[in-house]
Length: 549
Image (cartoon, rainbow, N blue to C red; front, side, top):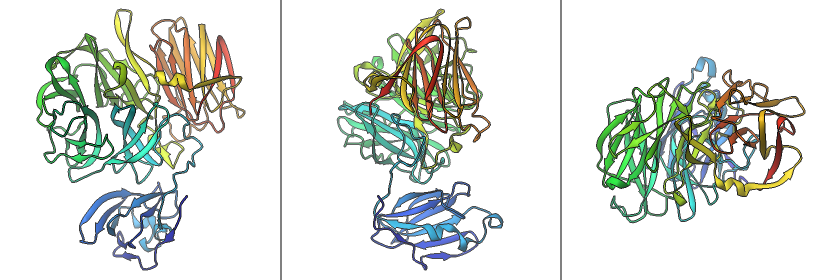
């Protein structure tokens, strides 16, 4: 709980103009709790130390009329806040009357107790603030490390840093201190991390090396290294390590190419990906580009990944907009990669989607996963409405971790996606009715219809059409759907044959459906005003399992 709380002194703020103020900070305090009002414009805040040097810069929607929630600013050596308000005083009123001056508080701690009805039970979420892309994921010494695009100063996108969480089972996550923060080169955008087992970079054996996009005036690629297992990072003095003259140049995914014994990185560069090679992770050579004539190009290409399944490679490629039902989604390409060029085996006009829901994006895999597995983790939202979903303390969760593989259907190679095997350990006893956090296993005999419903008549209807070999989920009446015109929809997916069994995962504000063989996956958010506790099934048999906490 919050303790030792004191409010701002009456003389702390200095009003300098209609848009400019300064705030002298009391010394010896751990946090200043900043009041946020989401409808307001951003206030640009420079944090200044005793030598009048800027410590950091952040953008916060400081409260003008009322407080939606608080975010903590750790003061450390901060002495002064230099604040510029971007709002129009004709609509916001006089700066001296803003609610933020009355509501700012000093505190020795920050209360992260969950206040959200829709926070998932067994999916990863940040304790507070905005989250989007998963970043820098790796496995080492029994621990899964997840970094993520994080805004510590509000529940909408801004102030991009790498947040950090760890897990031993991919289900229960421990929040860790912030890993990498913005610097003069820019905000810290998406990237990857590897375990340098052979000290190829010279930062130490088993050093964790992160490669990320520095998003400043231009987008460039930087690295940082950790010698304490990924807890803290030191930025490389020679940054940036890769530059290119295109505006959207980001999201490096580093991987080891065994046949040529060197590191590779695949980067999104506008409407293509680029491959670079390196022996030491510091000096990079351009090798080739791929994609200008392949797949979907209705949006910007982002967050690529490269997976090797023996003789075949899979290039994961996220795109926004351009998804099959609007907004963001993940496509993939199957082919061969020789350490220089990727050659796709599919027709240029073909688009293969990894997940046919509305809420599966920025999907990448963990480096160094045990047993040679490829374990993927998506961001479970959509850029069309991610900033307006009905939560405030936090926004966005990650989807279920998924084990990836290959299958063949109709002469084509498919990327399969199944719930990670760790999810079986979560399965509890059979129960008679669905709950807000459960798994439903459906044996499918042909065409099938399954309805989840609550006492208010809110419902999600799932149908499988055996003749069309198509699965559909209708969330148009699922609960609160009015926060965005893009939210109510029906999503459909090919099943590439008759599924024998479906696994449906419900977790308060999400429904994820997989067929048992992994040929179909569908991820959709839902916001029912009360849990779905009624199930109706035609054309199949459903068993409902509680999930262990």
